[in-house]
Amino acid sequence: MVETFEELITKHTRRELEDMALKIGIENLGGTKSQLAEAIIEAYKKAKPPAPKVEPLRPAVQEKPKEVQEKPKEVPLVIEQKKQPKAVPIKPLGTKGVMAKAAASDKFSKDAAKAGKDLRDEGLRNLKNGLAKFNSAVDAQTKENKDASFKFNGGVRQIQADSDRLASDMKANAKDIDNRSKKMVEDGVKRFQAGQAEFKGAISPDQGQRRG
Image 1 (tube, rainbow, N blue to C red):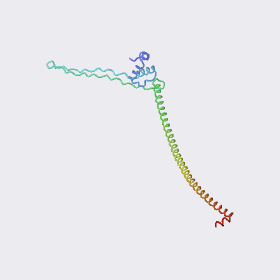
Image 2 (image 1 turned 30 degrees about the horizontal axis):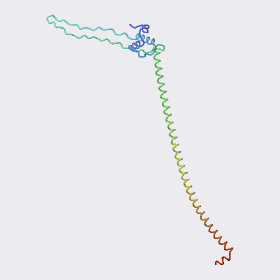
Image 3 (image 1 turned 120 degrees about the horizontal axis):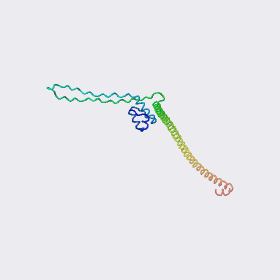
């Protein structure tokens, strides 16, 4: 005998109600304890009654005349096993029933989970694209810095070479100027001495004749 709604609520725990629901084919175990009890009662009402029990037939034993009567053979009894009634799936009907509300809640949960997964996948794709663009910009800036550094180093080497060449030229010019200065001094001394001798000869003609 099926228990009433009040008996299901007061005599059984929620765990026991869930076990009863699973046995009669109720898959959705959501909702409150009252909703679960109501679903169990509805399922019992819609379930088909079990098939009547069929008593096994015993084989008739034919008696032979007493003159030739033999011991009857033992015939195994065939006992038909009682088939358990299949659980009737409970489908939500209408829009106001407990099962309909439970199905709507389950659909909402699945839709929310799918929307969350789609949002997470889109966020991951955007993050990967952003990282790829950032890495590309970093690589381009690094290459540009290397090119600028190479050009700068080349300019420094060129300036150093020009400085070394200018210093060498200045050193050579200084040496040439020094040589020219010495030669000019020597020529000046010689000219001064010759001029002095000529001057002395001009002021002392007698001394010059005596010498001659």
